[in-house]
Image (cartoon, rainbow, N blue to C red; front, side):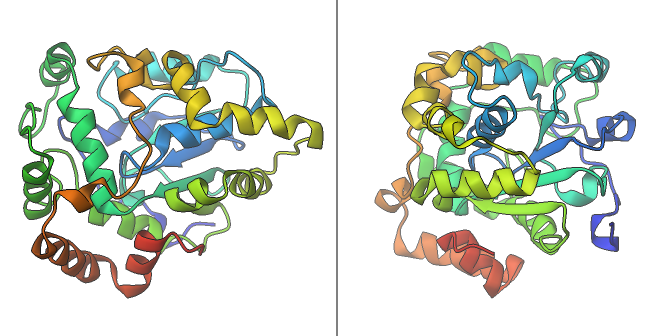
Length: 299
């Protein structure tokens, strides 16, 4: 089932992404697409899905198995060839809004979100620890559109205010991303998950995800699956979990898996800063979506 809300209407290009790769991607009916704005539990969700598919198997190289399809690196033909060669049920990552990818009614879409302040705080850590070599690779890859990626300010509050005032700069808009996925939340092949709900009840949320993906899991497999999706396990096996094995970040893969905590912005943002964020969120998303984004109440 598709609706006008799930039709591709545009392409998105920036210092990270090129959405045109989706135009050439040959879907399989059992594919799973994991979507987020960014820094909202994407890698966690990839680990969860891998564990559900492979029934708690150890040693899975999730970073290789589940590529960020619309990232400008490596070149599109390399990613498409690697995905075509996969024989297991595929699970693919995107940071695009719905209307910039190709929406397939036979495919399952998992969208995970987090309070924007938490996501941006995590994004600051992500950007400030990116190696100069990775920034250069992104900036010199063919067909760069828009400003090149540059090191962020040291102060996370300054980074946050730039992001808020410039609609996502230096990355991409949170508002349009969440707004488009919220609009398709009632489609039968779309499931919205909140980071807070995963933190509060990971086993319960994982069972809900398994049901949505139509994956049968034997009861005796659940303990291993749950253990392998814990923060401690993922940190200990970070080189198998995080994108590109963690090479793009100073300190490697364990830097990428930072704290997994919420509310760090409370120590830095003023009451006026938060009020400006909340007013913007209400204007962009509407009251119902804002409540979900802040609280994690299930939809």
